[in-house]
Amino acid sequence: MTRLLPAPLTSAAVFATWLLLNQSLSAGHLLLAALLALGLPRACAAFAPQPSRLGRPGTALRLALVVLADIVTSNVDVARRILGRESRLRPGFVWVPLDLRDPHGIVALAGIITMTPGTLSAVLADDRRALLVHALDVEDEAALVRQIKRRYEAPLMEIFESC
Image (cartoon, rainbow, N blue to C red):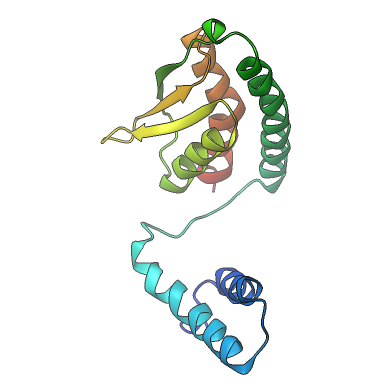
């Protein structure tokens, strides 16, 4: 069964997404959705550097709640800053040194940073030891680095590297 469905959740998501995007339950779309659901995860498996191992579901839930709260508060903050005087904005790039080594954790961190309004992951260093982050308002670079490491990187290390 594992050879047929190496990633059952991904297969289910591909199947459902195809049908939702096409808004059809015709035989042709059902067949194509099934073929995509079976084929895409198998074809993409070669690109995965290693299987991901998630640990600490409680930490993952707390992180999800922190990220959700940060997205909401950041939206309000970004709107306030954009509607204010442009001269008050201090955009900048900041290198965030990484203690996180798991590639899935690094991708999750980059995604979290990008999803939070006002910040964007720009570049991962070749040695994977630093992430370049663009922020809409950089008042204190050290404080921004500490916040990213404490709020996002530390829980991700627990989730991905404690297994």
